[in-house]
Length: 447
Image 1 (cartoon, rainbow, N blue to C red):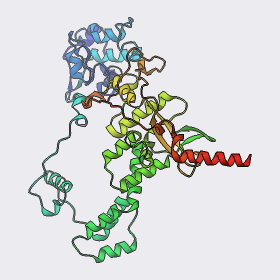
Image 2 (image 1 turned 120 degrees about the vertical axis):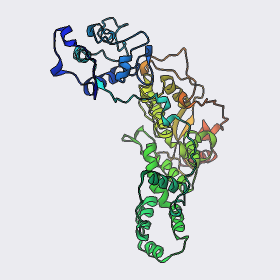
Image 3 (image 1 turned 180 degrees about the horizontal axis):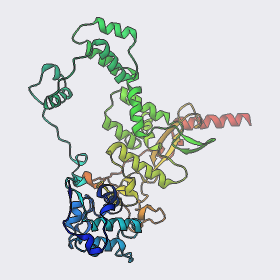
């Protein structure tokens, strides 16, 4: 069902477009979404105008209608996209390329046809009201459920959904199938024949729980699930040319091992995040914890520090906040409630850090072995917003303070952390000094 203005427009302009009327859904809406909704969409409505849905277009702006269906050529929307004055033309200069003559003609024909659009076109809500940005609330557990569906909270919610949908679950799988499923799920491997026979022979009520606990305690559990987390956190070995290090870090595998060991030791997710982002501050002399900062070391890029830090912001946001921020490097996000200043506030968190490989006890040659880690090299270095993301145009008169996107309504209050001298001068570590003395003594003897 399509809405149409009952006006004989074709007679007013002397031309009939009935045969070639543009489609709102395939021609007009995609054009407006691409060109206009950064400033006139669900997140931002400059001049009170929304162009992401026909109802908003027909409503007009705070200054009045933008379409004149009785006199299409007089429509303000057409006038603004046709304007030769860069101060009047839409999109504004620097916010996108002007509409082409073919695009303007398409828009004009749609207005002449009466601006038809579907009656049931959905109108998006303010992105700030999206569930992903709302404070999670704990729901009460569903009640009055069959006993076999009430063993865990997850079971209860599933059973409640089945009940609401009028569905009946399939019968419980046989024991061999259950063992195969849980073993693959937790370790990525099939059960051995001995494990299968033992499980089938044991009819005790605690048999299933013992199997699950055994699998969770298996080293294969961390190896299986660590692989998925490494995908999220972008684990990658170093790359370069010959011996030249260009990206990531040598010996980054120690971070991989930390991930696996953390899962196998049942370390909490929040603690893992803290160690990856700030292990050098909470445990500056603990090599086991410092391995976690491989998350930051992974983003290293030799040829451009700005690219390196941009990747750090982008992938930290994706991994831990569940949002993409790369658009906000150059401008406010086109849809998500992320401002350009949010991007650089996140960057300010990481601005002081550098990456290096530390010598490990017993191996003075860091090309053979070492610890890839992050450290705060320049705590006082400022962060500047780049105009349209151009690193050659920093706004130096207004440094950006560290922070996280404002949508999360959490104020960041950085506090100085005293660090040992070995943070900045790792050669002063006792085992490094001893190795240097031994090497010096050997050179002296051989001289």
